[in-house]
Image 1: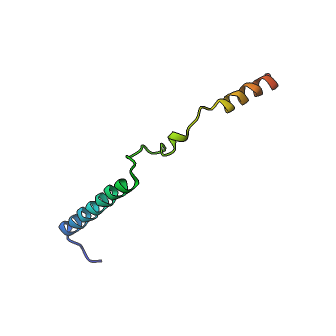
Image 2: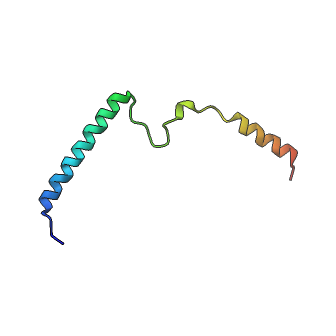
Image 3: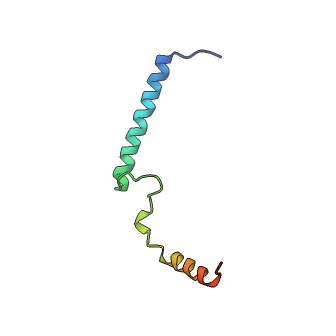
Length: 65
């Protein structure tokens, strides 16, 4: 196994990081959306969970302890 020059590896990593940064900026500009927290992609579609809450109330009434 040949050893690679650490400086060359670092240079390659910086080039890859720059490419990723440019792609990310391009993607954000094309999509027109800001960065969202993980798991928040569909938060605009969230509605209150009244149906599940009412079902829980109904179940407690139907099956008393």
